Image (cartoon, rainbow, N blue to C red; front, side, top):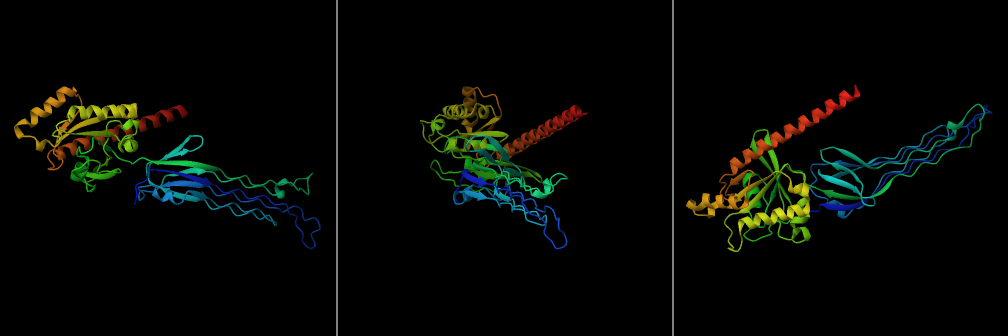
Length: 356
């Protein structure tokens, strides 16, 4: 199935049913009075998070969604049937924006989460509701209101804890194959990754994290070159970025330090917020260097970069140093989760104190 991470659809909620004007006419009841019922509400449209969906490809073929209209009321005070609500399944990580006003409606982040994107029309009122001591034969009623209609822009951002960054052939796909069960394409030419790949890394029982591999970024990506910019949004929800760099490029014109600078520049041009994310440097393919030169080469790269953050020297192909990397990532993710929980608890306590 083709990977599609953006789609535009039209949603039309159901109209409310009209109220009814009716009078009771039965034998032996000469003054029956009004008995017109209310209409039914129109059906609303909801988006629902489904973990089994991993692309928006289905919306290439079906772009218009309509909920049922509410039925009109009828005599004998019978209320019209409400329209059925419509539930549309979307992948987790789907961001919903009104295509006309550019208003952010919401994000679908968890399984089963529902988001109302078009509210059904309200039912009309029948003439029974207008009956009073001074208005015994009312002919007033109200029609149902129309349901909301919107053009929505859906944009999927994959849900992952860790995002992989690097130039083409830095070894990102090899790394995700080495540490998870994901099997992205690996070859000895650039741009083998054409869409994001997700892998679940299980460190121990009940200890795991999700890593996302995106197509390689090249210089000029911020201006539209290559595929990397198109998919950078998929690492915007991660907790940690792993910046892979090839320390032994086959092309002697490639400088590992310059490769790092290219990615940093593209990140800053794409999003200053993303450029401030926690980012660890991963020096890959150290096995291709003479063993005696490995440490010196890595030290020289770090010196020239003036790198202050965490750094790891690995060989993704031979799974050298990958286990230690995964354990360190797991510890970082768990600490981030604890901090997030404590922050949510603190906000909850603050709100409770204000209410008191």
